[in-house]
Image 1 (tube, rainbow, N blue to C red):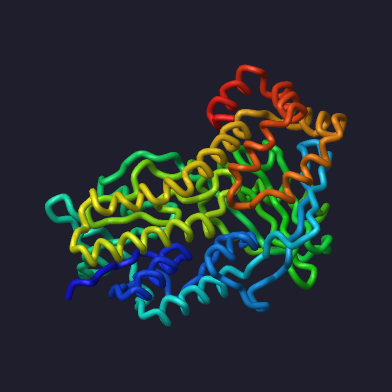
Image 2 (cartoon, rainbow, N blue to C red):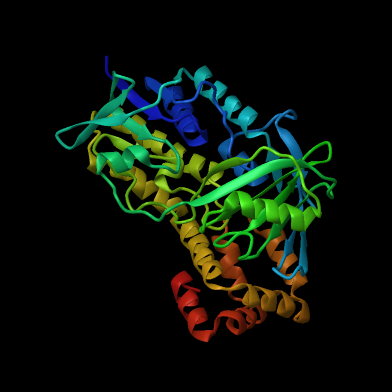
Amino acid sequence: MVLDAVVVGAGPSGLIFAEKAASKGLDVEVLEEHAKVGIPNHCTGLLSVEGLNRLGLHPSKEMIQQKISGCYVFSPKGDCVEVRDNRVRAYAIDRSLFDQHIAENALNSGARINLGKRVDSFIISQNRVIGVQSQGLNFHSHITVDAEGPSRRLLSKSGLFKKWEKPLLGINAEIKAELEPEMAEVWFSKTYAPGFFSWVVPLESNYCRVGLASNSGMIIERLKKFIKKRFDSDFNYNFRVGQVLVDGPLSKNSFNGLLLTGDAAGHVKPTTGGGVVMGGLCAIEAADIAVKAIDQNDTSAEFLGLYDAKWRKKYYNEFRSMKLLRNIADKVNDDQINKAFTLFVKENLNDKLLKLVSSGDMDFQDAVIKKALQDPKILLLIARIIGKLALDEMLQFVNV
C-alpha cells in the first residue's frame, strides 16, 4: 500500500498539514516518535491571538494559562520600558493540551496518527523520496512531509540539504512567583542570554514560566543565575531543554516527493524563535500543493516547488524583516543596549512605541518594522546606537 502522504512528526505544523490534507481527501499517516502527542513539551507556549485566528484554532479555557496584553522590557542594567496594549494580544498556552487538540482535529478529518514510531531515514530511489523507514518498517508514500522539528536529522542524513545555522539552545522552567497578570517580561543581557534574551511569562495560580536561549551553552547555569537575579531566590524546578531556530527559512523546502514544514523548513520567527503560527500557515500552503500534486499525479520537485513559491509570496518579507532585526540584535553589545534604553526615555519615544505595538502584529512584523524606520526620531536613535553606515545598509535591505 502506498500512502498519499506520510508526515514525520506530530507537532503543530505536521498535524495542521495532516488535518488540511486529509480533509480534502488525501490518505495521510503521521508518524510520531513519542508515546503521546505534545509530550515532552519544550515550548514556552506564548501564542498571539491574531495568529491563532489565522490558523482557525481557538484554544479552550483549559488550554489558556494566562492572557497577555503587554510586557516589560529590561536593559542589561535593569532599566525598564513598559509596552502595554488595551487588549489581549497573546495567550500563555498549555502546549501539550494544545497539540493534542490539533491532533484531534487531524483525526477527525481522517488522518491517522501512529505513536511510538521513530523514523530512521527517508527511503530514496532514483533521487526521489518515496517514503520513510521506521523501526524496520517501510511506509511508502507519494509525498513525504518532514515536520521533524529543528534537529533536521533526517534531512541531514539524506544529504538533500546540508548547510544551515546551528540552532540556539533554549531552556525554561515553571516556578511559583507572584507577578502582575497579563504582563510578560523580556530581559536583554549578554551575561544571561548571549545571542538571544531571557523571558518571564505569568501563568495561573501565581506560577510563571521563565526561560532563555543562548548561542554559547551553559544554559542551565545561565538560567539559575537569571532566576536568582530576577527573583532573588533559589527554586527547585524541572528544566525543559530544546532548540531555538533564529536563522529563518531554508532556501529550499521542496524536493522530489518531499516537502518540509515547520521548524524543519525554518518557518520560525527569527526575532522570538516562535514557530507555531508561521509554521502552521506555511503548512496550510504545503497541504494545498500536496492535494493538487496527488490530483495531477505529479510529485516532482518542479511541481512541489509551487509550495516554495506560495509561502514566499505570502510570508518571505515577514521572515526577511525579522531576520534583519535578529542580525542587528546579535551585533549590539550590552553597553549599546543600555544606551538605547537611555536615549529611548530621553527622546520620549514611549508613545510612538505604544502606537506601533497597538497597530502592529506579533507574527506579521514587516509592516510595523518599515513604519518604525520611516520615523525620523527612531532613525536617529538607531543611527546613534549602531552607526549611520549600518543604518543605511538596513534601510536599503528593507526597501524603505
